[in-house]
Picture 1 (cartoon, one colour):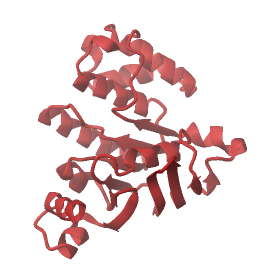
Picture 2 (tube, rainbow, N blue to C red):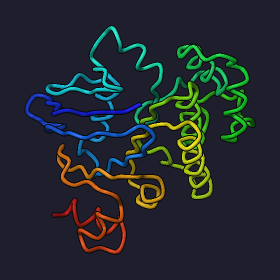
Picture 3 (cartoon, rainbow, N blue to C red):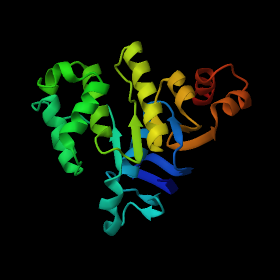
Picture 4 (cartoon, rainbow, N blue to C red):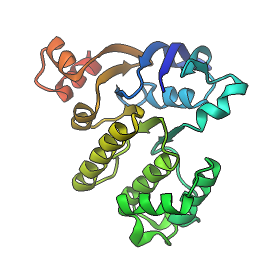
Length: 240
């Protein structure tokens, strides 16, 4: 599935959270969305999901407008996301949470799918524990399992490895790589981990003050700005 963003803006009273952005993501691509806190990344993801209504502009998924009520449900059946700003129900166990979301997406063979995800993401040992009792890193892995429950064709990842230790973070990045390759999934990744972005992304969008101010491959941006790596490039762009 493809994503096309046309002249997208979001205004909150006198605050312009997103300002007339345009970009395309081809099927099977992983695109990084980079920028400092408050630059509009999460708002952009919210508009792609249809959770936030744009002030101006349109979001097309597979050439269908996400605001079109006739196609919206079918589109969103094939989309999922993870965000540190959205918590799973705390009083439900890990297994109960995945059952709820699996039923919402109409997942076939749900019991087998939940077991598969819990094994792959090392969730088996606390499957019966309430989600609210777990560490932030454990919750992050549950959120990722939730995001993969329907084998999405479009996956929106907002800080997917936040709060994870380096070993688990590396495992999750590998898992995302394999998922994208195996399923041909289209992924938008918002992250502050520059090594993660360099490893995963085919292209990078640099965002600042609600605008996309630069874009390209990691190597082309590093070369363009005369820096040694993506982190130095990021710092140069956001501080200018």
